Length: 181
Image (tube, rainbow, N blue to C red; front, side, top):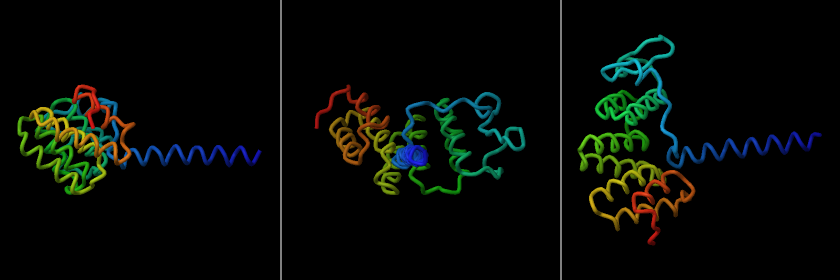
């Protein structure tokens, strides 16, 4: 009986570590964020504060970086790019790969491609293994017709252990679903 408990505990620990590793590798997010009151009730770029049970200005709130990041990601998926940028600006961790990556994404989607590319590069400089930034940068390169440079990012993602991730599959799809490396 003790052996079963030990095996179960080890399996649970391994699953937990795999989830943490995937998140550390680049927020491997194949699912869009669930809509919350940030996008269903809040206006003007405010975010939902569950403790206060109301919408608040991100820059004036005491919300933690993880809550603000999730709100920014939700706003980005909702196409609210300027609000995404404002919420990201309220975070303390301004130089983290995840913030720089989403600043790249929001700026690119808002039509500021070059600024977006600068943020992607800074995200990769902050963490060269942050494969989500490599994926989004690769997609931006495809949009610019710079397909060979996008393939370089696909190889980088693969070589950094990301071949079974959303980041890899999304970039591969942007490249027409054909591996040419």
